[in-house]
Length: 146
Image 1 (cartoon, one colour):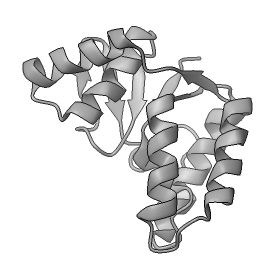
Image 2 (tube, one colour):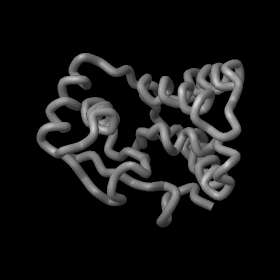
Image 3 (cartoon, rainbow, N blue to C red):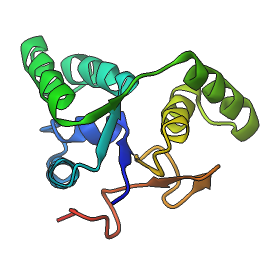
Image 4 (tube, rainbow, N blue to C red):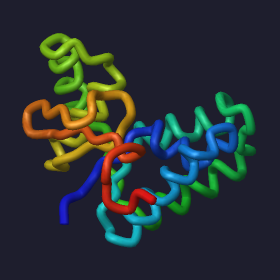
């Protein structure tokens, strides 16, 4: 089974009580990924998750709740670290493909860690860049989607 790098927006939707339909879909996808040991998170995504869930959601998590969630992801999921090579690859992709830098860093983390797909709403569904495909798991027939 292939691995999937989960972008911040999908992870955050699983906690977003103001978007109940997306929350349910995101939770179903995350449960499927964890059960199949197919989910991957980057250190960038975990940091963005903490910031988004404690500061940007209508119904925010407490810092302690977000901390506990990150602890659980660190123990249950494969985590990839943002390295200097990823930063350089993201900068190259920003110029070459006109991708916003933080999105390019997600792409670069997948590419350099040989993860064939990124789950995100931030890219065109089905788009492939240098062997990394972008899928929106909240639409279509993504495995685990209810």
